[in-house]
Image 1 (cartoon, rainbow, N blue to C red):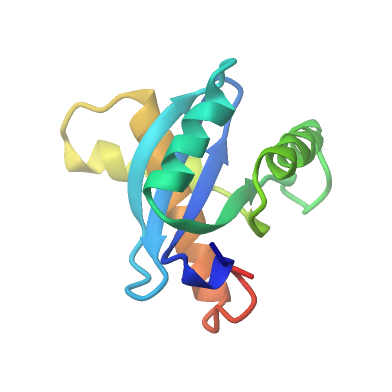
Image 2: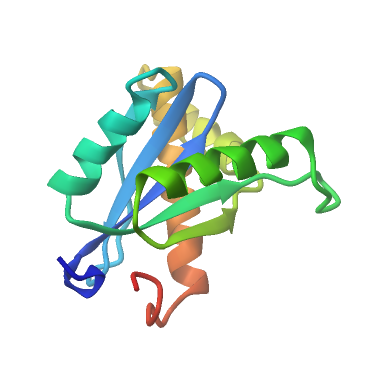
Length: 145
């Protein structure tokens, strides 16, 4: 199936234990939290199931940097993770700065006053990453091809 026929884009907030996953329609462009996946031996199979069932045309990975924009150990970890991602998926994969998205997600969940889990923070952070990506790429030409 050609990439142009895909209707959704996925974003990942990658952590050491969990990966927050968010999704948006390429038409409506309204990202929402989808799920949180455990970093385990089944991670790439679990993600493949989502990519197939949700008609994903591209993946956005949150890209961490230090406060001054410098490379950090986490930056290198995400670059290594993305190399593995490219080995498992024949989709365009993009980086998006993830500065303060987890902190913003935690603050929003606390402000709601309802109980939440760590995974909820990760999935909401992935939503912010995807929202920033869509804002930065008003014209999605070439994003999913």
